[in-house]
Length: 245
Image (tube, rainbow, N blue to C red; front, top):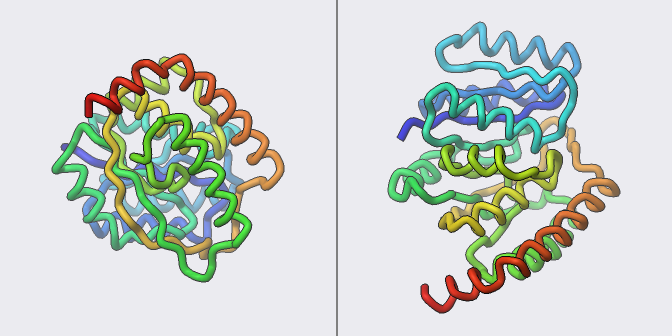
């Protein structure tokens, strides 16, 4: 295994430096994806790369494409750089970097599987966001006919790059907050095993959230509907997997 971290960044200039330093302390190179950030944040990313040229690189998107668009660009760049796996982690500091060794240990023991974070929240989580996640959990369980994915919205995970990049090059996947859920369901459909790793999550250190309550929920609802019809088309295969496992 050759692992790097892919970190999508959109105007998290105040928080991303601490995240990068914490990730680097675990020996992981970082691919920072500048998702059309404002100039001040872009300069922060450039300074991080200049200070650690062998361990930090920047992929720059000319305009904001959304978290999913940034992740897809970062995953492709990571594979092109020769990495076999990529750890996804948010730039705002909500994920506990102290859990990185646990994620990597699971990935090394099962390199063909996806390691997915299962959030353990503190009191900082917005209650509306917390309760709203359960609707997505139910739809994911329906669309996979499985409880294998405990939380599909956590953006702290380790991807095997070859099958993940193959998927995103072959299938049109949502580019915004719908990405995390859709890519996970579609990888499961393709037979990828899922390992769930509990991890503490807090809400952001810089106070910035790019979740659009209206439009991201509209996109996520549309994604669930699209996946439902995709599940119906795959129903015999999914049922066979259940009875034969």
